[in-house]
Length: 410
Ligand code: F6P
Image 1 (cartoon, rainbow, N blue to C red):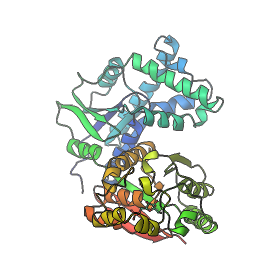
Image 2: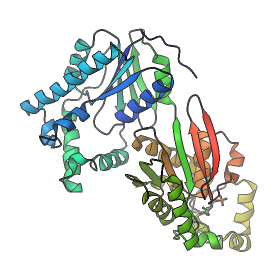
Image 3: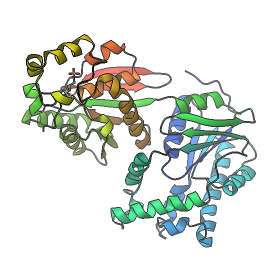
Image 4: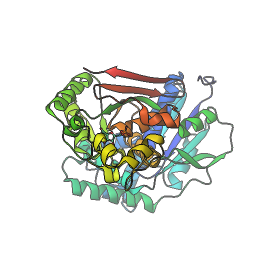
């Protein structure tokens, strides 16, 4: 879908929110969709300026964010002003949209922005995510950056959490600003919005915020395990020698593609597959999500399909009659997995900030559900989608393109 816009429709977008609330993810998503529509857009990130400056000073320390630290407050204001100026210059020369990516949680900072950027309209976008598990995961990723190199994981986490608390002390939600959207950035839902001015691109921005888009998702099933050889379900089996070789082949296949994150389940078979892939990557983090654990087959865990048919014929035939809705006694069904898979996908997209290649190493039933999240399949067909171990799916699902490709990696 092509946006209708003219070059004189200039806009400032100002991100708002505590650290680790998904602001940069949303900023990159917007930039990406604008780029596809030839709308020159640039992100101005205050953190980047601070980190450049940090080469000389310790600006990672939580004290640097203490509102009572007068010297640091001045410096942070200075960094904000540098970006405000750069954004203004950009929009008034070659640019059309400038995105200011910083916390901007205080009303005072936002007033400074409004007073300085009074030549074109401003849209504030506040990101809110109160899922503490995902905030913790996001913090774990952030403290891996060079900035925190001298600290232990615990020290860095404490510093980062204190930083958030300092920002919380000066936080006021959007309300008096002329144009804003407050959104749940994990679920891509708009909480409330206000529109006073005629804003260029507004409906397209809104669309982009509430749509699950995937630029490039590689969906892989773990490679062969000892359980697969015996046709057993569930469990936590390791990869066989053949499975290890398949995982190495996957690694070679992806060697020249940049994969920043691999999302797996908590099971050994997906982690071992992902570790092999990571071994040929430059800088790749593996994140285990419980949401991507294979369907829990309850009383049938560890059994083969043959054994189920022989020893529990009622389970076998009930499942065969309605595979999507059938729930294993003491376990799950495809229907009951739907919600957690959706949350897993949201988490993966939230953590994979830049919309580049995303990789999920999952299981047969899980991957079926992930595929059906992006591409419509009749419910009754979902439990039969083909999920082989010697091929992978590449999925693209954006506002203007849908692709669903089964690729051989060996
Ligand atoms: O690899 C086997 C497996 O992942 C099992 O752990 C799981 O129960 C099964 O596939 C899901 O496939 P189906 O729903 O077709 O039995």
